[in-house]
Length: 196
Length: 184
Image 1 (cartoon, rainbow over the protein chains, first blue to last red):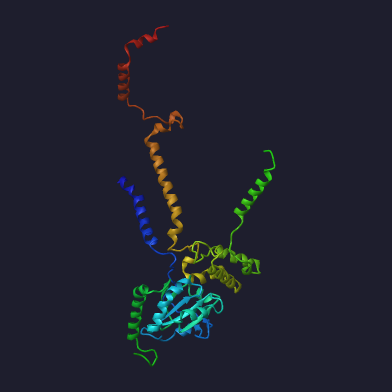
Image 2 (cartoon, each protein chain N blue to C red):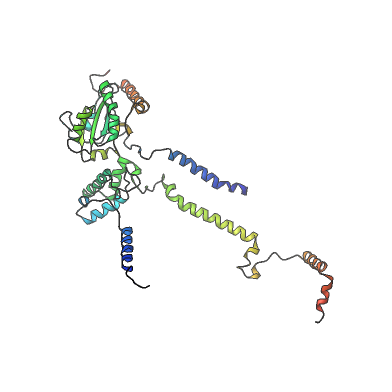
């Protein structure tokens, strides 16, 4: 019986190894969002340029263009190189009419965002200018680019940290949009005349 | 020691190094500092407990990242508008999660985290004491250097064992040793 006592340190080590195996596999740079399932925080941002109107949380109420009725909220900046990497994909999504894309121009100098969009194209229906960064903090943003999926009731359903690409779209976003589409089809229309 | 012309430069260098070692490192810029020194002190101490979510292993007080500066300004703005320390922390945790606190809150989930070092120390210490106590009982001759002779020693012999010892000693004594009692 005394022999078994010597197994205790081994057992503790095994338990510790279990925790390490779980924890070390996670990327600490990707903070899980605390806002999933909650409503968008209130904000009202001025426009970046004459091309698109400003952005407020009320702009996410009601069905967006595209099948699922959801919208993307993309945090970007002209200083952000990874945003340039994901930009062609956003342009493609906008051209295909797949989903409505809203943008927040985070911590940009005046005019820099507009110039960047003029050079690379504008996939956004509306863009808010968050020069101070307060709205980004309210959204729990830690870097750019980050993309939120917002449903037709203005609730945050998912967050993608880092550039959005076809792979992430397939694995994370398309299934969620499918879910939202199905949910929208099952629900009775909430006072909107264009229910399918 | 004798002072010569190299002493002063050496002392100056030592003073410089010590001064640099002990000077506080922080990233707060002059335009962030609040006018009210009490509020500023609270802001600094709060900042030291909040993680810079970009650099992740620095507090926002230490980090030069732009987001850290935004968070420092936010902390000061909330303190100015009358929030308590706990309210400011709750504000940030609501947006970034518990990870933003450098010191995890003490709760049921984090109890193991906080208590584990103490528990392991106590448990390990108790284990070591048990092992040492056992050794003392089983190997008394190892203590003879430290303990008075009367306390140590093997168990006393029974009468039969004693008779056996005497017989063995008699048998092993060499034949000519009886002559040692002769006067020289």
